[in-house]
Length: 195
Image (tube, rainbow, N blue to C red):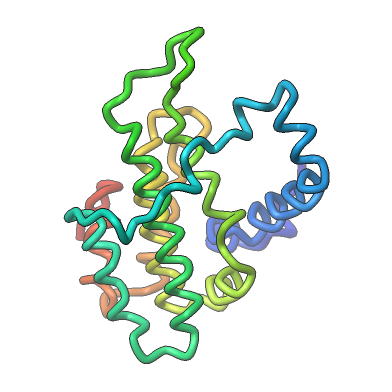
């Protein structure tokens, strides 16, 4: 396994290698999705009520925090791309939040905690344009990614997610610098990197 072609640490954390890899897996699986979803991968591929999630129908303080980011790209030519990603992140937050009061999975239970799936919904639902802006290190794209990192951090107790959110928020904060500090305060607080 050679990650050297993925660039330096910051490039890797910004998804230079793993995002195209997941997109590739998605491209391979899509033609066979129906067959796979009916087989032994049924539980892993079922995203429950994701399609029913409409963050515009729910108002809470966390959602308002996300929506406040719109000020960042108000007059930006890529505003529609950022708006799409904001909508995806709000849906992910909402999807993950519904499992926040659930205990760990109970064997044989028909309902189980799918919060971890929310973390993996970002890459398939985010546009190529967004990832191009992220790799160009555009501030709105980076700040949205930091909020994604904060959402990931809620899964930090899972061995396979440990440190992801922390690393994302830390790298984004390093790249942005103090000018964007007010926009980074919530993600920094969530992962324990308060300024």
